[in-house]
Image (cartoon, rainbow, N blue to C red; front, side):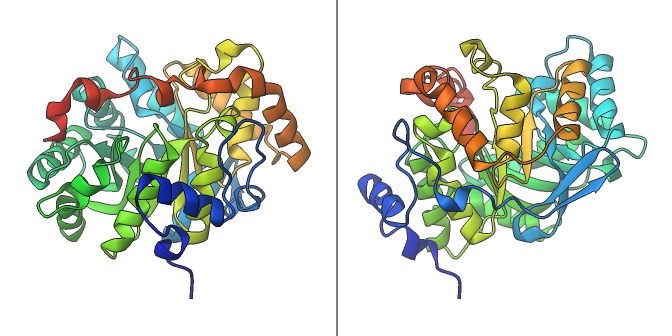
Length: 349
């Protein structure tokens, strides 16, 4: 019998979660700490078709492309036709995982993707989007709005977005909370799988997992920042990934370059950033592709990818250690710059 999260995380209190993580052999995220053994060398089953690699998404059995197209970035090109062309260029070259969110560009990213997925393209992709609502009513409304914008009767994965506060898990799983709307939508065939995302602190992710366990629920996927600097500060790689691997929950990596901010450190290249995240137990590394050359960069990373050895991973972490101190290049952890729901609390309901 697999261990429960209660056995891994003895309490959902802040200090209790941290202590349980260390007791389970999960790293503390302090500068210079190496990865936990469970976080390295356990990449999901991988197959190659053409030039693309596909990995299994947790226990779902679904095969998804190793790189995924980021939903926020696809809303950035000022010309809608250009954005649609970028999406189709990615799909034509084997990228099947589509990321999106109800709030990206006030719904513009979903509208753009919905148009791109016409003409048979919807059947070629694994479509994911996210909702912000914390109440049953707000979440149900956002789910239906996302489906209309995406021009589909269902999405493959729907995620609770921006789980970044310690109280977010309580709101999601409370009576009348967003999880009720998720389960109703799944029962109605509007969504196939359920996950959550967040970028602030691994303790919040661990608390969300524990709260789900208390309610008898097992997430299908979890999305978080995974990059060359994460291991030195509030590390999702060290504290959350081992739990997901143990629980057979699909690992979705994001912010491998931190919207380009990590590249501003001058100590690592885009391909190195992508290869590092790909070498973790990630099913998908979601990356921004607001230009065709960014799609081609991601494709090049896949074509040239060989899982990095432990020594290579350690060398990249050592190279970034000074720059990573205090999370100064991971502003999604240390500032409100990436917190859409902080600027728009009304989205939460």
